[in-house]
Image (cartoon, rainbow, N blue to C red):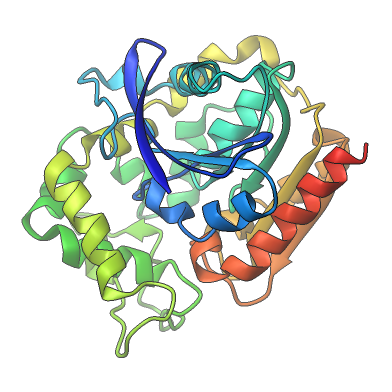
Amino acid sequence: MQHRTLKANGIRIHAVEAGSGPLVLFVHGFPESWYSWRHQLPVLAAAGYHAVAIDVRGYGRSSAPTAVDAYRMTEHVADNLGVVAALGYSEAVVVGHDWGAPIAWNSALLHPEVFRAVAGLSVPYTPRGKVRPSEVFRAMGGAEEFYIQYFQRPARAEAEIEPDVAGWLEGFYYSASGSAPPLLPGTGSMATVAKGGRMRDRFARPEEPLTWLRPEDLEFYAAEFERTGLSGGLNRYRNVDRDHKDFASLHGQPITVPSLFIGGSKDGPTLWGAKAIERFAQTLPKLHRSVILDGCGHWTQQERPAEVNAALVDFLAALEHR
């Protein structure tokens, strides 16, 4: 795998690539990096594709603008467009996980002439609705704060994470994974925060080594965030209402290019998005497959790399035969 720095949309984007052929662009989520696609890049390269995983703006070696509104969805889509052009291509298949999934979905929605197909992991495509996202998340929290609400105020979550980045990441990764035990009745949800509490108060901790997250993997992620901080990644959450306003003209619009969805049966966003998945016939009219991996948690491509790779290669092969 080769590293390079690209100039895209007026900023610096760090990219890691493997192989040659049609371009497949991978977009990660929070709190990750290009590294979350380490199991996919060599497999897709071997299958005959130019596989490229980026550090999203605010992460890793990519630029980290200071303004909160620099992380609105339209800027992330523009970054993807710039990356495709900087790599010398006119089109690509875009694949995203977690926040990378909405970035991928919206890249295909706004620019189907460039993003000829799209795959989303964990977070299903949901067209813009009538209600502002902040109101939806407030309702999801009930008497507590839904974690996206908790992330809204600048510096709040950063203050919780910064003293022990590696410990916070380990708890966050494990608690959202398929490996974690279910929370005991009456102890609340990992996705909500008690008033005056912290997210880490509900984290579970692994009692034995994880096969999908080795010590060296956690060390890589921790080193990245100890260097860059968490504000860039958290600022994506702080733009949900701006995105709602920016996409007013696209209310309810389907994605018209071929698509693939992969989720986990134990993944929060996949479970919360059950109604969105039920509407795929209308919202993703060219859906190739919707795959739910039994027992898989949130970190789809890391927890179940072989099954994710097989689904992606199958999807890409089907595109070539259209």
